[in-house]
Image (cartoon, rainbow, N blue to C red; front, side, top):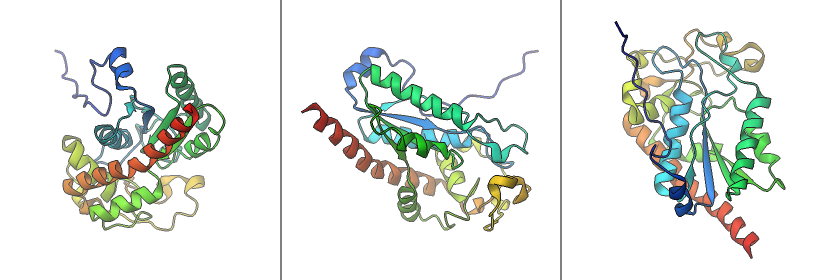
Length: 253
């Protein structure tokens, strides 16, 4: 007997029927690349959580702004979560190379601006990729920045501080409750765990600070907060689009 397979949600890609003529006709000057991860998010959120979050942000951005939406990078740098089954990582050097290759490919097809929409805080190397993009022929930006998240948290009424709400907490659970509620399993209501002193996280990994894999207060999550978080981020993106598009117009003169 064939075992039914779990349904794969449509995350944040362009519609599947999109053709090269559609992309050419859009004349988008800025591409957005969602970058997630494949790592544990406690017993109630899926391994794909960061990818779902990055794609949700990218989709909201694409609905509000004229950008070229790319499919997500779904595995990244999750080494601090290696103690939990299911977590898969690639090296920082590999992620760096993937992003640089995507940028070069976009450049050859006429798009010289790329925004990395990062859903995983452990992807530290993305800052280096953006920093080193100066003079490469592709202007890059990393979104959302910490200030963008701060504004979004305030507008959405997220109660847990950014430091305490590290992983599978109020923010991530809220976005999934809004964007893909079918992916959230029961138990988030009683899974709060805080560990604000994480001085040696990079050396010891997450297991030194949480048994469940959760650091945050998911019990405070609501779908309404998730909707308002995404709306605020889409609004914040306008500044990035204006900056990159303005640079393109100056170069064209």
